[in-house]
Image 1 (cartoon, one colour):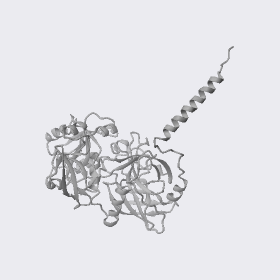
Image 2: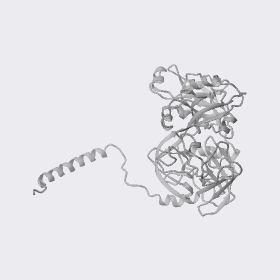
Image 3: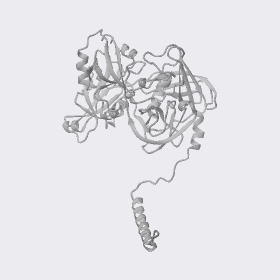
Image 4: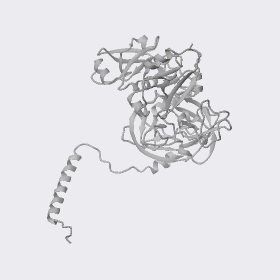
Length: 485
């Protein structure tokens, strides 16, 4: 039987040839300017120093459950009742059926001052009657709510304690994609759990927090991590963990955190005033497609296209018109329409700002004095101040679904997305921002024009049935809208 034969001389020559190519190729790579990755970082010292300042937060709401919150057999919110394309990772331990006992939940937070100030998410403590903070050393304190802001999803708590370990707030402005970051929190009530990853992108947005340019990471985050810190390698807080994108409820590599600059602005206002003030431009905007850019004299699809201007708003007074494309706000470039709301909202009412627009292919600059953004306690922007608010009998603020958002929602056929709910009856029925309206009284809604055509035919005082999609699941919700003012 003939064995496997190896030509050692040819093999030797081939090996030398291969090594020579590798040496040349390696030299070529070394001249490209790419930094070499020499090894993975060691997070042990960081965790030892930062961990004691990370806390577990337990909340209790006494009395009946929220209207429209049906829960499941274990008392946890059913998947259908969670926000549309961003599933909060808010851990709700097992509870008895609805209306029999108080609702309980848990999340994370972190100490920012030795005298007991603690940061967490608004959605962690929302409507809580009792808030208990458990320290890393197992001590527990009842917390006072200093203030909470649904538009940024930030809440500030205070416990009666001194000389507590605290974290330093870092710099998220200069944070770059590819940098290492670390999360510490209490996923599923497992305190002091540590995960790490990299920054994937910056400036992400969602329907409920349009004033937050979220940091996207691949750090493993799950329910109960809400409100915990996102840390850089110096152990400084660069973000507050807020939500994940998932069709299953578990981590799939898409985690989102509130930049610490945004959070710090909110924290300062909550500490001083108990509430947050934001500027309002008074426009409804949309993205700029390649076709729109070409038609409107732009070289590339950038900026925020003004769809409509609120009567009497700051934008109208300054001279901004429908069809203008906003390219800069107060010296900051506006690459996409999602970037404008956070830039405007970061400024207090009364701020004088320069707005650069493209109008018919020519650049124009306007001086704008911002109005005040007004929102209810649930974070719904009031119709009286809402940018380009569309008045309709349903009491809903709706938006078209962008291609990116449609993919994130599971590619629904047609539909419009709810951005805010003004009608009390609609809220009680269970409608919420992020829901996708597919039909109204069995009439298909493909886009905003369809929505307006259908709602124009509705009669006041009569019940209406909406077929909506939430978390990939469709359901019917019926209610009788309250009369418009």
